[in-house]
Image (cartoon, rainbow, N blue to C red; front, side, top):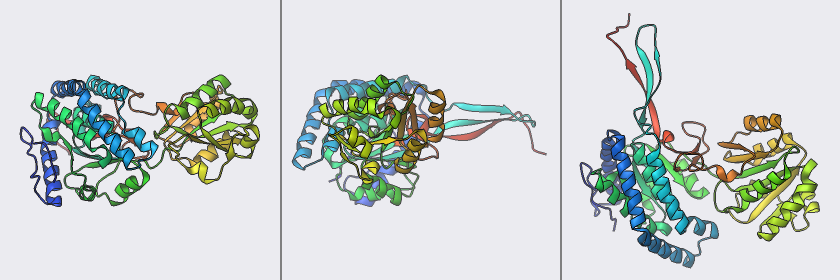
Amino acid sequence: MITTASAIGVAQAPDPGADLPSYVDGVCRAACTAARELARTDTATKNRALEAIATQLLKRHAEIACANAEDMRAAREHGLNEALLDRLELTPKRQESMVQGVREIAALPDPIGEILELRRRPSGIQVGRMRVPLGVIGVIYESRPGVTVDAAALCLKSGNAVILRGGTESLRSNLAIGRCLHAGLAEVDLPLMAVTVIADPDRAIVGELLRAQDGIDVLVPRGGRSLIEKVSSEARMPVLRHLDGICHVYVDAGADLDKAEAVAYNAKTQRYATCNTMECLLVAEAVAAKLLPRLGRRFLEARVELRGCERTCTLLPEAVPATEQDYATEFLSPILAVRVVADLDEALAHIERFGSAHTDAIITENLDRALRFLREVDSSSVLVNASTRFADGCEYGLGAELGISTDKLHARGPVGLESLTSQKFVVLGTGQVRT
């Protein structure tokens, strides 16, 4: 049985007894109605809703934790891998981060209605661009119940309605969070269908959402390669997505080795199952003999398996020979590919061949080489002397993110408030006519 919360205001919940296409159509229609109301909602009301949601998340902390524990138990019984289990788990710290993220989004400037680049033309008219919501955002995701909060908060602040279809493995957690979201919306009389958490686990719903081009303006998939490829190939509306996070750290000949050791170790071990975790370490041969034994000891203590080139295996007896496929793999686990390269040119060539345009970093004290790396690495985030783990909406000051886009059009990198808006031309005149 498909279940959904009833709605208040102008948006009405679809009939839960309807057939699947009719149900999804009803969800989309209700979301479109809610999106129109959100588009004209003032900033103060949206911020009050976000604060009410944050309060509900705190108030129902134990309920969310209990639901997540049930999801974790069922996921282990079904043999979910460690990467997915890590993404599924809501630790107390992650619950605190969800609340903090909602409040940070409330504190950010509201992009809606902002007029940019207003210029006076020879005719006397003034031409500018105004930020407006995209409309209805669909999010299809696996594990990651935190996405439920981030997506709802970002879409609410940017004036968009959102339809959330999480994975079966996180259903209990998502529904518990959804109750907090609806309670917060109800406190300020905003339509509950501004946030729809689809409760039915039927996978056929995904196919219906992909065909709902009249009701969903943009889709955001978050999950494994198979999910993202399916959404990218079958969706009839624009998609914001990335496939893999094959992230590199290149240690240059001009690097401070203490800095390089700290950054590379953090980039791999701070958390294994994230898309901005380093999967390949590139080290200039000029510093390899000094740096790799130091890093090798630390990775060995952390039980990270090292797969390296011939030079790496000579310097690190504990490493195993790497295959070409290792350099093209997003491990999402304690496995790291390592390669000694001649110089920056060889590092750039390696990243171009094996990278996924997600996040790459250089460690160097040489300004010219740092600037070359920034210019020539064609990724959504490029860092100098900092861990790849910083490629994140919260760390970038966006409050949260709806995902990370490696596309080059519309949005690139962490998808925050501005990425969930479009722009329309606005013209201010005083009675001008065109001759």
